[in-house]
Image (tube, rainbow, N blue to C red):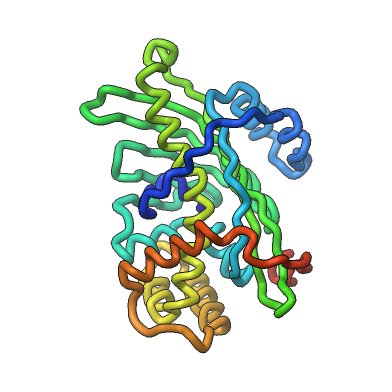
Length: 285
């Protein structure tokens, strides 16, 4: 979620209080399409997942969204974060430093480099080297993170497109002397994951709702994102215009609209019973 979205931390705090649950890492490993993952990434991913100190998987979220817009938000995290920054929602920054590599800072002591190891319509796998420095440098942590985003494309009885996705995260601490600081550091990381893993998924759906409700703002904000090629900006802005709804509102989203979109995201699961939707031809390229 962009998901680099774990770095954002800008959505109003909505703590996900579920305790860590047992999980079968071998089942997760077996579910991944290793033949589609570049060989140079395979050992590192397996190491992080099998020896992770922390693991979280969010509940599945279901929300209405055009599949092409959803993928634009997921595959272009610089754009996605730029929209959130335009609303004043975060001090985080993110930049592309390679074809599938991004570097970011959340403005609160965490820096990271993210690689999109796999990016398909139904599955995204990201790998990150992450560094966190606590207040007054009391805690310094280096970690590797594997983030898995699973996505389904669905349609309800009224032929409205929906997305159902969930986020799974594995964190392996690489800092020297980890055992010595684990007692202090563990609550920091647990708190980060409890909020951020769930919010990583909410982040995309919140922005999707805001774009749908305020398309004029979204189109203008997208055209200001000069880190994204002009042709891509025009393509996404055109997509927003094509999907413009009669109830769309002029102007920028206000704080109340952002809060409402966030509350909608929290309560979205289970509102409709969609049936599988074949991928739009544009998503298979």
